[in-house]
Length: 286
Image 1 (spheres, rainbow, N blue to C red):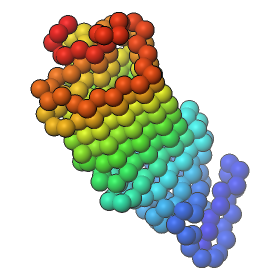
Image 2: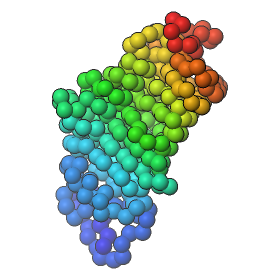
Image 3: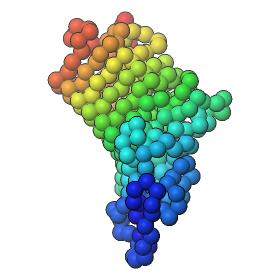
Image 4: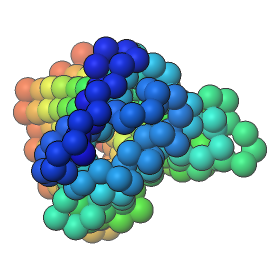
């Protein structure tokens, strides 16, 4: 059986063979999805490799993805998934040797309740998770005890044309990267995040590559250095920055808090507010 979505409210139902992996599932014979419960039902009934397309609307609730699918919205600001603030707005578990792709969606959170103080988005592997043209701003409101984006297990994470803005978290304002994670961030904006252990990104192991990305006005609440990124790892760590711009930070955007020297590569950097030799410092050398 194949189901097609036509226009905003008309559905075409035809009979035939089941869609092959990679086929697009855009809706069902029901009205357009108005809650994440509708999306969860479609995830549960879709074949691995299918594409689930979401209409341009605001959908209230939280979303869980645990099989290799593509979830495609109508664009940032058009398709909005907003949690009620009681749990993460997005939970993804990528099985081994699989890829989950999320694109063209805004994820955000309503005012949190006392029942949720954790993270905005929770990820786990060991597979690959891709975000493309996704707004991950304000995924948790108020003060969170984790990071806006956090992983529970090793995985590969690829982010392209992503916005991560306006979080205030105990650990890192934007994302915590741990041993076993391989993270690439390209063509993105990380802005206005505040963290107690790192302004935007805390790198405690694994690999991080950032390209053509702008950090703006992030803040580290415990010091001057490390406004954007802090490397704090006793394990082998790789950091590569290519054409990364740091703007409107009150001190050196990067700091190291580790006795183990990480592998660091810089190319085509821009740090207009601080002299080049001091844009990276050892934490505590403020």
